[in-house]
Image 1 (tube, helix red, strand yellow):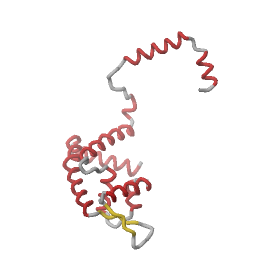
Image 2: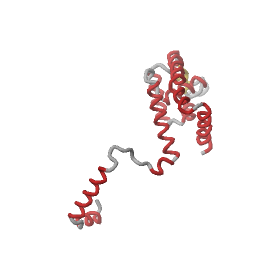
Image 3: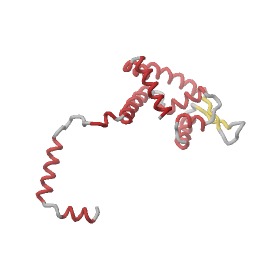
Image 4: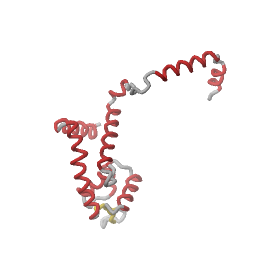
Length: 177
């Protein structure tokens, strides 16, 4: 507390302090149990995108609970499957995952025998990523769960045309913003 704030506080009259507490107590009772008013926050695109992302990720995690895969891990496995022989820096960069976070994620995936890092024959400083047989099997099951549960729920909510329009709009933001 600064000196000026301390002086200001000591000059308050007890009646002012008591009135402030009374006003706060009255306000506390108002709206109890009601949702907070978001005001203009509900019109902020960034806020709405983040809220939607949280809901989508919650659903994804529920759908993937049996496989214990996060959205990021699923994305890594998909990219490794579609891009065999690419190095871990390329995969991390494409997904926008920071190097230290990506290394920790790969350690986890390797410890579960879902993927392997192999030293590149072209550049000994680099490691290429490959799916293990178990990783291929888990990814196949994950794709089926995503299609039949997670994406199906989103499709049911949005409808095919809105889903395609939303993907196009979000891709535009991601690529051009």
